[in-house]
Image (tube, rainbow, N blue to C red; front, side, top):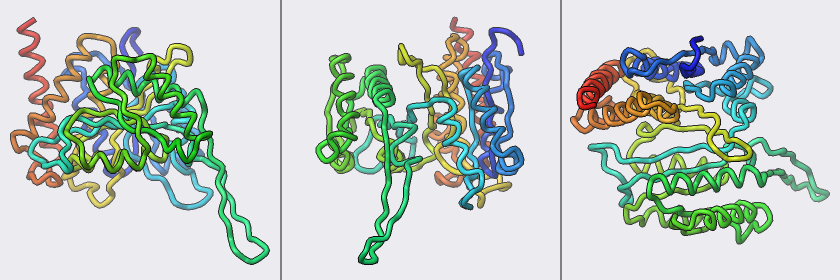
Length: 362
């Protein structure tokens, strides 16, 4: 691989997830975006994960730790006990990821719900909490069955999520809104609230409105349209992400970023970009799936490459996607008639045009 050229780890997936990844890679070609790139491919399809006993997942994570950049297709998580399980859980742990960022935003021509207008970002813990918790059941002397679960969160992850929340709000001019149920869980969820309060002290210029998680959900349906950043525990953030994205009319309109940080500076160190939706097996091979979220994931990844070319390309892709939809050129899920490949072709045409014009303007 050529020195000084960014390398993106490409994690191939299953069914329609793989088809959408290939569409995003078409947009990322250096001849289109004017940013030289290398690609390192890893097959994370279910068949390959089973064959390698998840070794390929660990290899992909190790490669991402070296390059800092990854683009992942949607993958199948088998429901069979004792099978290979979720590659996402393995990747997040192996890459020491702490934050999942998803941003709901208006899709041109799609009517939002509840008065939302400006973007709403969910900053969610990527590890711990209810996911990966130890669970068991016991039978009492009276014959009743009781289920138990031991969850955990760490101070380090709480601090990383809190700090990134306020950095994201500062960057976007948003208000930090919401938080954990610290009144009921003063020790467990209270630790996360302590870190949010501490981050608020470090960033006095950011507006901070701490709320309990139930109030957060309720007030989102009464929002005045202001840009918000919502910090959340892993389980709460999982629920909030789907809820917020649907407020804008479709889960297809947003990318998902899994972020790891430098332990000392809390600067972003690794980024794995993906679409928040699944593998959509019913759409496989029909060329009608919406590649929007996967293309936006590619654009987001470029935004973390510190070159002028990459930043320009990132903006050009974002603008091209939303301009295409604004002009009524959409896939069937959004009420249009374009095929998956036709939508990508139109985005590529616009990206090339924008970068050519911007180059002429200096």
